[in-house]
Image 1: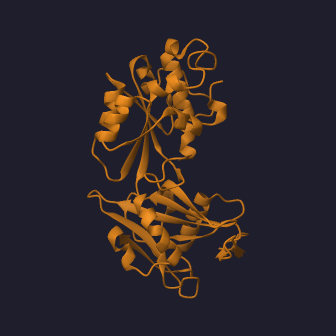
Image 2 (image 1 turned 45 degrees about the vertical axis):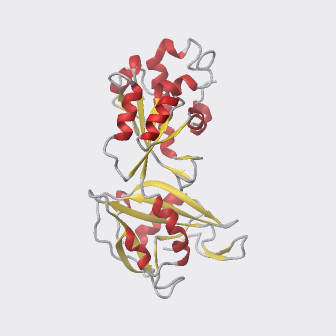
Image 3 (image 1 turned 90 degrees about the vertical axis):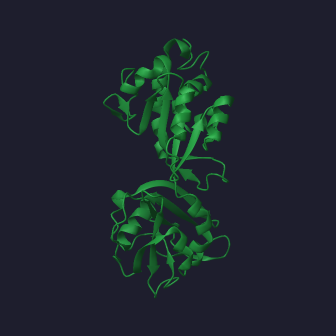
Length: 318
């Protein structure tokens, strides 16, 4: 359907692209119980740019749209996939200078029949991962495919609560968690961190490209608490801050796991269980021994400074 983004634009590289305000597309995938992955591809109508080739559904962004909204809208316009069932895991910008294309990667719970829904689509098909390059691919998609296929996993962010709380600015003197010393109110300090972590559902960035190929990830968040802070796992501690998304004493989108004994042992257990190839774990801790144990289990590790830099400045203790 037409919008104010329809039209051609020139980039700094001298190329002409469709989409006055840039464009985005959705690469939807499904991973079955056996670990086999299929991706949803569109065969472009013969009369359009790249006619007859295969790539992701997508198109021009409207001036008021973010890339995720635009990719889901375009996909819903061009095929019968119910985009309400898509869980978005990450986005990647291909910047041409003054014009960009954003790849949006998301999973669906099952493979359903998908049919064309507009004249821009010749066919729609679920294609096994290893068969994608057997298709005649749309050249820009073909260039991006080797990188995109590496990222068809969801990010689970596992936070070592005790370590991060102790690293927050003002944790020992001054500030919201420091005026009495966070150790005097461990449950309260952990509850405030839990509330602040909800903001990360809007996306995290700045991760090493060799392991995390997308610009922004939308993680599942797990906060591991121990000792006196365990009671926040059942909502018994301070109520979440206003606007934090309180649901029955817990914060929506943040899973709080109470370690029965050692928090470190629980974190290693979480990143080790199942070895799901569809998941990449990122542990936040500055503890060297825990880092080594998590990396040995196949997880990636970053320090608290990265995490605290992702939180809105208004949530930082001062």
